[in-house]
Length: 169
Image (tube, rainbow, N blue to C red; front, top):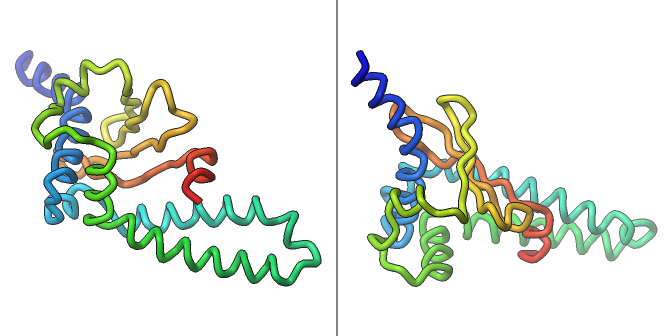
């Protein structure tokens, strides 16, 4: 019984770090099949579109008053944002983003190295979900939310701070 409890505790503590490392490795390898298994792309696309739309509307509200061209600009920007998000939040788009931001080989970062890093943190939400984020830039970098599927983890949400979204618009 003690061994079973120890294995469950080890899984609970370590599995988020290995899930992040596996996702990163799949993206660097450009393994679209594995990325499709590890990421809920449809759900994340809709969420990111909503986040961009909310930011766009909040930024343009003052400009819309009495300005027909500003309203047209918002409509065009919203459509362009949808197209951009559809392209970026895909297996190929994620692989390109990760490769552009990380020069290391897929096997150079392991779950152990992420676990020992003081730059990132995991906030668990019971046994079914966890958030992975940058400790130093939490207000400037996206937070990845993973949900449990059986004994595996799948990226289910991407929360982007307004400052991050504003720089990407």
